Image (cartoon, rainbow, N blue to C red; front, side, top):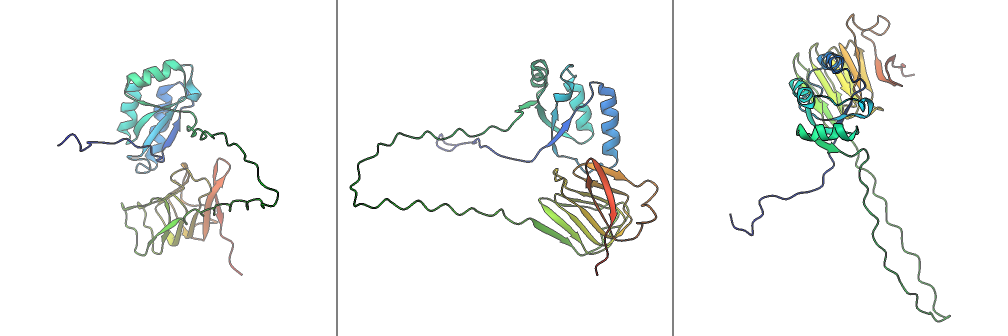
Length: 253
């Protein structure tokens, strides 16, 4: 390879990350609850980059090597930490973790050079004001449409999109969408909407028989099945504060 051919380049990037906030310095309890939580949907965060927030446990320095090994054993790819004390950040660096800023860095305003106004003859009309730039609308969210039954053990992920399923979702199947999930058939497997943290996401099912539903990482497991008043009926799932709510869909008139 010649010296004129670069072997790499470094760029800024803005990729979505999950932030896992530690709320207790008791690492044994932290591990127990995390393992139990992920057991409900083992594929949900599998392979996803995760940043560990230390703001809630600033009074203790965890054994990061042990903690990262445990989390990676659960399928979480720990990229670094955010917040915490100086001692915690130093220990995280020693364990090979990156340090993320508490707030995204903002670009510095461009330096404005001084402009000297020149005299203008009275007869010269003032220049017209500049035309404001046209604000571009954000691109519409994409939709992934599935028109075949989703089999047991099958996993479908609509990344950056809504998910529409036109056939039955069997027990043991898993639907994941960064946006909303619509199932125009019986939903008997697991459905996880707002997978990248969209708390406004919803799940709609023509016949609600799900094993588990999730909005933005908050779960509701139906170990005894869907409540009788909603079982097999049109229903929707959404967040009501910090609680996953299940409500009937009002019939069209």
